[in-house]
Length: 173
Image (cartoon, rainbow, N blue to C red; front, side, top):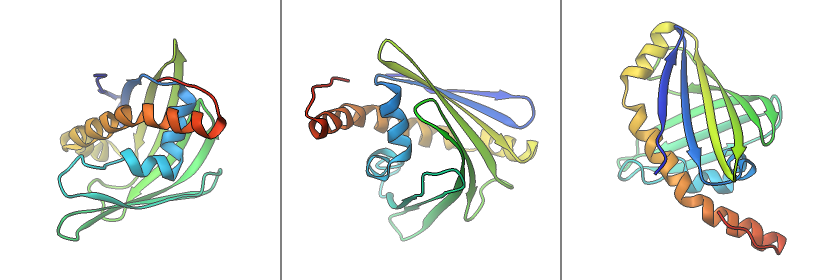
């Protein structure tokens, strides 16, 4: 299984790196298409939580809104805007939680590079302050991210098959 690496850089950034056994266009689509996002992002990572809202207006200046719902009805919502969209290489977004668990917001830059049919995703999160970055580093976000990206890795073969079926071609991941 591919490992997520987390590296602090400077006083406001965290860099997340993860490799996937899939072409970068498929990984990009999995981060931007609601039909794919709802199948991997947060699903089954924490018992009883579901991905209840997935709204995506994929255009520069467009917004996204995601809400996870817990087994007791609690919700965790996040929203942001698309700052830059350059498929399949780059996606830049802002993020802010409805009930902030860290101070302020952040801007994330996801870069996808492909070699030999494998894609390396490098996401740099730049937080509004050092305190916010440190709060994220001290949280349990790593387990959620690892679970989510493991879900994505497991879904990528199905996504590739579905894409091939819709195009009438054969593909393997």
